[in-house]
Amino acid sequence: MIHFIKMITFLILAGFSLIAQANCTISNAMAVNPVGPLTYKGQADGAVIGSQIGSGWGGSVTQPTVFGNCGGATKQNAYVKPRDIPTGVIYSNAGINYPIYPTGVNGIGYVIGIKDPYASAYISISPPQVQTFPTAGVSNDPRSSIGYTAQVLYVITGTLKTGTYVVPSKIIADLTITNAITGAMFASPTTLTLGGDY
Image (cartoon, rainbow, N blue to C red; front, side, top):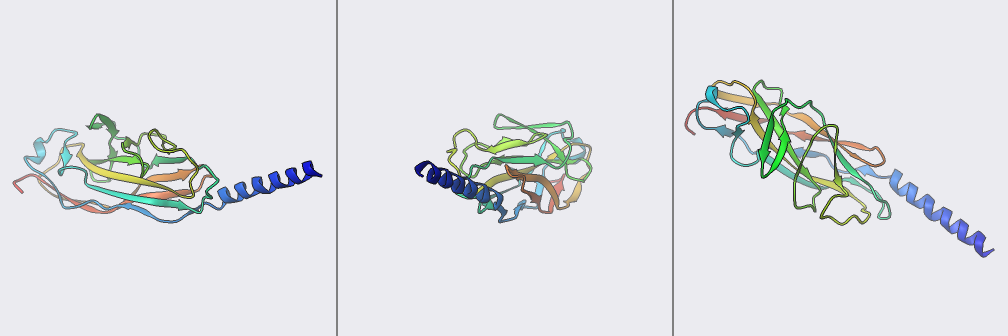
């Protein structure tokens, strides 16, 4: 009888764990809102490929609960998959090499830095995907929610003329956890001004 009760208890707990994982839901959208207008000083048509537009990262966001109701006893892995194909140009920042992705505007690309909200260091998003949790320097204990911190930076990837460019909003990455639920990360539209003295 004791063994029977133990088996029933195990099955109930195992069933609860599976239900908790299955019930993990998308709780919040994630959008990076660039702080614009961003400017590049100097002659636009003479800019070096890979030059940054603006000073510092163009925009950043932390959303600690992209996926919620995951169950405190359930361990989810978190991943980020880029939506675009890299241009082949690399941008280096703080010792990290970032693939540059197309914005949809000729001659202008973007890079994405991503990390777990509780991690100290950003990582670059390279195809096919990167894992943000579990990750070094962050407790691997099971969580009831999964989130991300992201930042976007704009880079010159081709010949441009002096003027103002509007980069449209677009989905830049898919956010995925172990049980295959997928959310999306958006970059909001922004204005970039190139050339001249600002």
